[in-house]
Image (cartoon, rainbow, N blue to C red; front, side, top):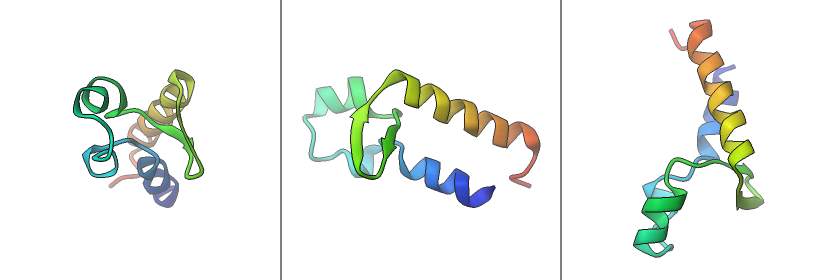
Length: 65
């Protein structure tokens, strides 16, 4: 389960993997969002919702301990 969570976090847009975007677009749109796969960088609200739900389920299961 921990590996899946680490993979999911790798799909999140963070400062380190968005530096090539324009600053205002990056800050207002990308940071915190999730893309569907390592090959698909499109940002969709449903993929972000599914990712956040998965992370919340991981945390509520207590598996991070």
